[in-house]
Image 1 (cartoon, rainbow, N blue to C red):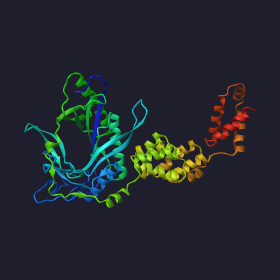
Image 2: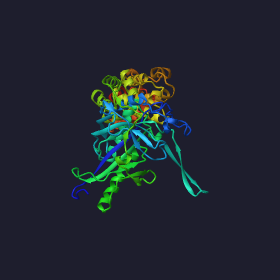
Image 3: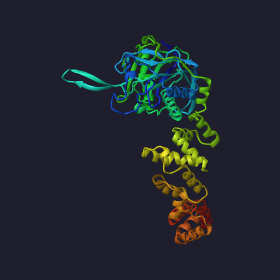
Image 4: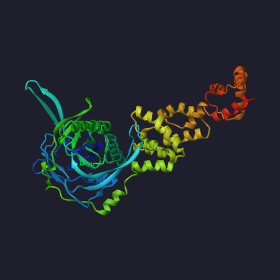
Length: 491
């Protein structure tokens, strides 16, 4: 047990299972389509029937290598597949084809940006131990009970069995639930940017198992590790970690023994509960798969795939801050989804001022996208027309208020901001003579307020600004209007 004279520290590592977005499974041509009738995407290879032979899907290898490169992992010149003995109803062969001692990639890292509540945002480099390829298992559906037989029963759907997975194993570098959630979130951003997975946690395309222990102080030996499963959101990852940290600390302080086990996160009760004792690697009795040859990725092939990698989220965040002058918050929000980042960059290339474009995208436009369950690629307001609207505001042709008035139509119908403004006569009044004439009319209509202003009640200038905007339907150039109004009020 760790020493008792230091503060408690959590030690957290994540095993992230990413379902690679290929149309067929890892070792067979069976479909990977989600949501179809149970047991309609299985074949003799998936079931491991006698006489069948698995064949590696080359697109799986490509996706796994690209993901490994994006995670700064070293690609192995030589790797192999192994059989992991795994006796469970959701695995029809009773073994899983995975990679044990020679994975496709090892020793990498990613940078995550952590925003802890009440604390300054900080960057942290998280080590990644390995990425390996493997096949997924099926899915058990615990259907209920048979009253006549007096027993409960479960159903099994093998559609997911044999779907390609990339398992990404972090080093135990995480220390808080928030760090764990941010790490998992960054992994999802990266695989989505690459196009190797949709990362949809609700459909099981990205699943995380958390390994967590606590110790007294950063120099103490690691405590007993507990695995937590059944988390389907980043919020659940954070909450499960926070609960388990406190559970383990309390256990140590009361003399209770922590055992190596697998626990489940109960979302409804917001707690972890024991599921089963945790197996060690020796329990799986790994041995090289006799039906699959070694995997060799040539230097030429590696470099051709590396050349196809896009700019990744962390690189975009740094570029937006360094080159475009955006805040860390704006850069983070804009790069969360690739479609949003692409939309933003297209608008900036079309001439829009970066900060103003960012404000519109992260505000009103993002609200429209979210409420209508769209992607930015589906918006009827093109990036070019957003840039045009921002430019019209900068040039004083329309006010921000007018822009907000026409934005709903631009979002629902598309079209040119300039055309809408011209058609509806919404252009800004920026003629000094026209504004002067309106100001003089207002002063004549409100002599008492003019006298009070000149008597020292300077706040009344706001009253006149409001009257002026009301009279012009918000079309008067605010800066010019204030200048003329101030001069006339002072007499």
